[in-house]
Image (cartoon, rainbow, N blue to C red; front, top):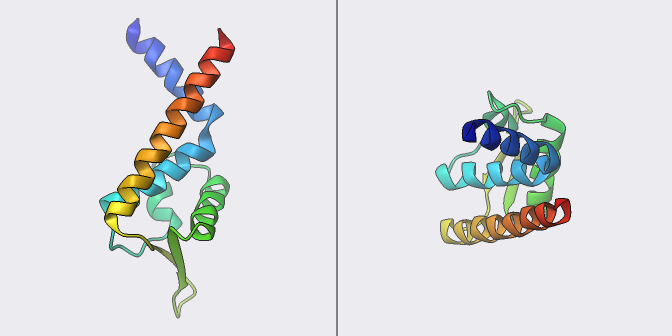
Length: 111
């Protein structure tokens, strides 16, 4: 029974906050692979991520100076981290706090 509640709550979080969670997924991917040049498909593969939302969040991270964008000679778009690993950890921690506060606010409004 508890497992069903957790699954339902988690799916609701994903539906209501898909853009912030996609951004978090990108940040966590960068934490795991800080020196990797990657494509959006590296994050989207088998993760049921909306590619439009993913591209928007990657563009937001580029605008914020967190990611760089490079286009190869063959026309493939690559992204790479533009911050130190420590800065990325701090960004992810702040993002998690903000997401937690947002989710807590949503729950308080629902009660």
